[in-house]
Image 1 (cartoon, rainbow, N blue to C red):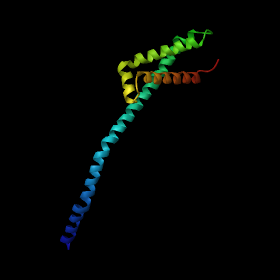
Image 2 (image 1 turned 45 degrees about the vertical axis):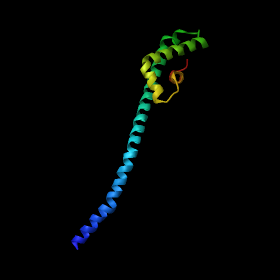
Image 3 (image 1 turned 60 degrees about the horizontal axis):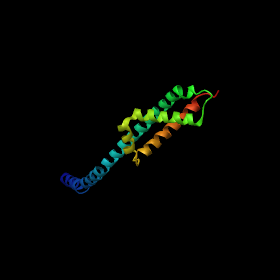
Image 4 (image 1 turned 30 degrees about the vertical axis):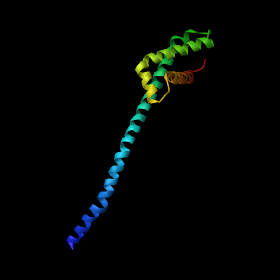
Amino acid sequence: MQDTIETIGMLAIKGFIMPVIGLFLAWASTKLPAWITTHIKNQREAAILNKLATLSLTVVQEVDQTVVSNLGNKVTKASLSAARDQALETLKSHLGPQGLQEIEQVFGLENQDAVIKMLVSFIEQGVHSLKLSTPSE
């Protein structure tokens, strides 16, 4: 009786359990690399976005302290546009050519003009955040 139970157990393992485990391992071997790639790409994108948000806010604060605050009552659209351009150039210099290229590649942007538009968006968001955090006079 014991031999019969052992034989049935071995047949069940060989006939059912091993193929199921084999199918699971085959499925996992095809899905796991894609999951790892997606997970790493998402973490990389999140890290870049976080760095851009922090860096752009820092640059906006710097330009606000050094340029905009010195304008006093002479604030014009042209002077604010020049301040934004200065913030953009500062942000680009902090990122460097390699950082700008990495942003283009990671986010699948078509060219450096698209990267610049993205940086301007971050600067404008930083200006908005700065206005919200500064009490109105």
